[in-house]
Image 1 (spheres, rainbow, N blue to C red):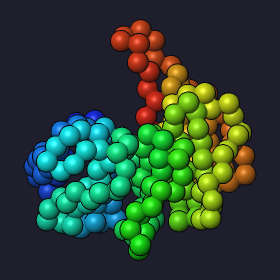
Image 2: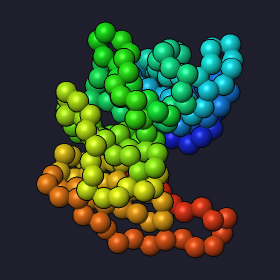
Image 3: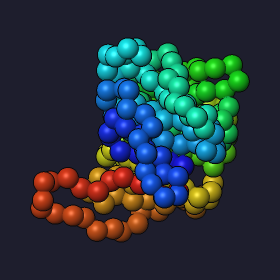
Image 4: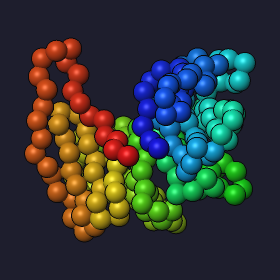
Length: 201
């Protein structure tokens, strides 16, 4: 599972109807990802004071209830992805967190809007002002194939089939060796916003 919208409620579909499962936290639930119906993670868009703390909230669903998890950060969180339930990456405002067998740890201080990987040693975190970082299982390194001067999202199907999308119709594809710009359309008029979200699961 992946993707999300900036609202304060998590809904679950049981095959016939939608049910609101989590509405306790003010602020937006920005992204959701899981390994199964009994192992789901969600992240909060912005820090808000509530009875459950202020900022940096990650939620976990075990198939019955959503439980708040302290990720030990007060930063807004925007994206979540993992290779398993004990190898989870969360990106936010100036922070990338990793959850493993020893709990949460700060992975880097770049942060991002979106995170995706094909495995535990092939992870992309993309975001503010065009930052694109790749994790090889040991360290995060910047990707400088383009002047990524846009807010970005990342998604892929394998290590040789990765897409990064941004504002104004910006879209590039990675085939395992080369990043290639893909021509797209751009929406004009309206309220001035342009499509720049990417999530296909």
